Image 1: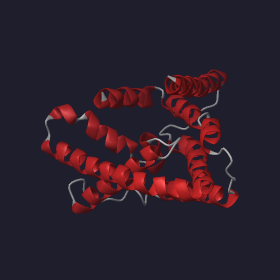
Image 2: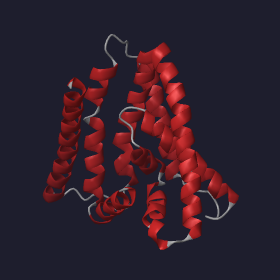
Image 3: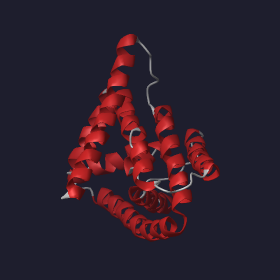
Image 4: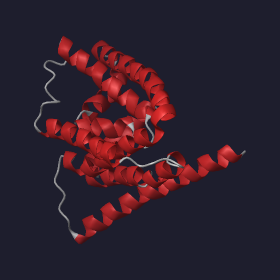
Length: 219
């Protein structure tokens, strides 16, 4: 399933890159009202932490644009394997936070194509690919376990502040996704309509997923 998803997403990013990115933006931005509704009941919004969340994502994107996050040396070097664990930690942690996906974070860091290419080559029987995926998976598992404990503690003690920070992460991550496009967008009427439809489809999908989740929780 993961390999198939990687292949499908790789295909769409190659052929309709901008539309795929705007679909992700729709998924993310339309999830914000759901996060607020579910997590911010009787909680005070913290504008400072919200802005800090935006700033952190902005710094990560700046480092990505400057190429700093991409400098990991040889793909078989120790620095590269350390970076894979780090990416796995970040990706795993992002899965715990509401409204944030591992794929989105990899896109923001400029590492999605690299990770996807490894998953895409899993059928090649290349031992180096298996080792890299295993190292990445270890990082993901560590990220999930550590983040689950930390997030659980933060939500119990400082829920409003924690969600405010997460909202900053989510909104900033969505808005800077177009900056990672390989091909700049040419805003013709046809292109604009296609991007708008993709964005709305992302919103419709998150709406129905939320509706399905609520329906299941009522059973």
